[in-house]
Length: 358
Image (cartoon, rainbow, N blue to C red; front, top):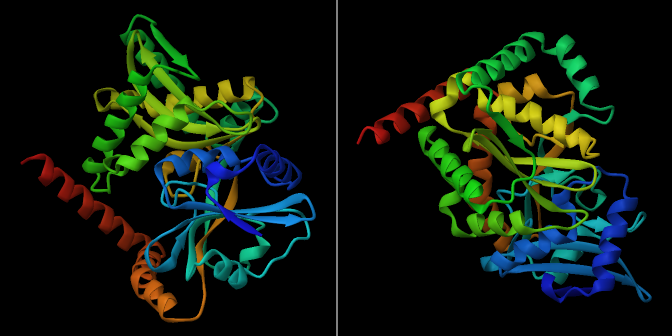
C-alpha cells in the first residue's frame, strides 16, 4: 500500500479506480469517482488516498481527509453524499490496520455507501436516501406519480401552467446551464434559505463555494457538474446544482426565488430535471439523505446510507468520542421524536425571522 496526495495518482491508478467502480455493481454515484476526490483535494489540502497494489496492479483506493490529532474524515465530509473505499471484489483489509497505516486515530463518515465490507460494524445510524427511477423513461415515471402522488402531480403541473400564463408562456428550462452567473444566483438563494430557516450556511465556507464552482466546470464521464435552471424569460426562478455520471444524477443544492414561491418553482424544476435526465440516458436521480415532503412525493424508492466512525483504541480515539458522539446522539434523539423535531424546526424558524427583522 502507498499513501499519496490525490494529485499524485497516475493515469493508470485513476483508470483502475474507474474500472473498479464500474465492476462494483453499486449505483454509479459521481461522488465515488476519482474526479470528485481530485477536485475536492484542490480545496482540501489535507486530502489523501491509500492505494492497494497486488503485483503491478492497483486493486483498491481509500480517499480521506486527515485533520488535527489524526482525526480522519471522508472526502468532502459534510457535503459529500456518497462515501467509502473502492476495492476489488474479495479484497478485505482490516479497518484498524488501515487507519494505522494512514496515521489516523479514526475515520468519520456521514453518507457511507451501502455494501462497504471494510467498515461493517462501524455504522451507528442508517438513513434513507430517496431516489427517482426514470430508467423506463419520463412518461413511465409521470404515470407512476399519477397513481402514487396524484394530488402532488396535479397541483405542480397546474402551478407550472399558472406561471406560464403570468409570463405570457415564456417559461423555459435548461438542464445543463454553463453560465457562472446562474450558479452565483443559486448560491445566493441557498445561503438566504439557510439563514431564513436557521440552518448553518454552507456557502459561508469558502472551501464549499470553491468546490462547487470547480465542479461546475468539471466534465468527466463519471463525474460532471450539472446546473439546471428554470427561467421566466431571462430571469431564473429556480435552480439546482448536482453531479452526474452516465446513469446517476446526484441531487445536491436546490433553491428558488422566494418571490415566485406560490408557483412552487422548485417542484416544477424537479419534474423537468427528471424529464431531461431520462432523455439524457440517466436512470436514477438520487435526492440525498434527509426528510422532506417533496422527496416523499417525488421518490420511487430508497437507497440506504450510513453514519458512524471507525476508531483505533487510545487517547486520540477518546477525544474523537468526546468531540462528536454526544452531539450525534442528541441529533438522533431529536430525529426519533417527530414532535420534538417539529418544535425544534419551529424554534429555528422563529430565530431566523428575528434575525431577519434586525
